[in-house]
Amino acid sequence: MQSYLHSLGRSAGLAVLVALGALLAPQAARADRCDDLAKELKNGIEGIKIGQTAAGTVYLAHPKARELTLGCSSKNFSNQLFGKTDRKPPPEFVDLMASAAAIVFTLPKDDMARGVSRCYRRLGIFRGDDVPSRYRRLDMRCVRTKTESSITISRSKDQ
Image 1 (cartoon, rainbow, N blue to C red):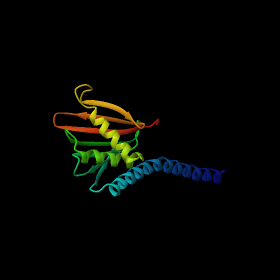
Image 2 (cartoon, rainbow, N blue to C red):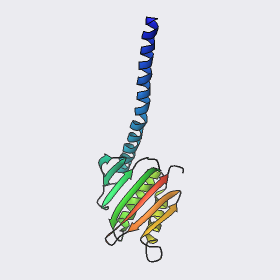
Image 3 (cartoon, helix red, strand yellow):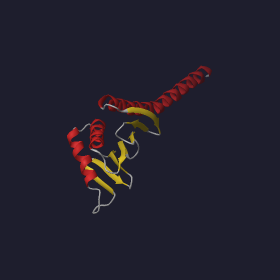
Image 4 (cartoon, rainbow, N blue to C red):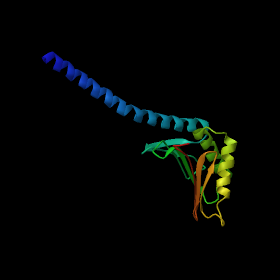
């Protein structure tokens, strides 16, 4: 009887270790995929620097953008790319966002350039300063204030 209890204790301890390992494994894989994506951006686009990672967001830096972030997988979206620049975005910023979106969402760069410029063209008197749109199964949202404009590109989890 005592050897039975002893073997039962070992198997229960092993089960706890396996369950703990299974619980921690997906978190590490998600963080690695996000870091890999940030490294792909750094290798694919000249001038991008990788900053710190906090709460599933990798902060990036580029001379053509005031702010640039890569949001990793969450409950609502698979990936999210955010960029902020001057009120009237220069062509270099549009090219930067198109290049980054092409890498993150694995789509052709010319399609992404068309989508980013289309989103910014829609800002104005008729549609306002906050314009959501869909392009190539991506959610794009352009926002403009008096001093700056931003674009958020994301793909929903159900896409």
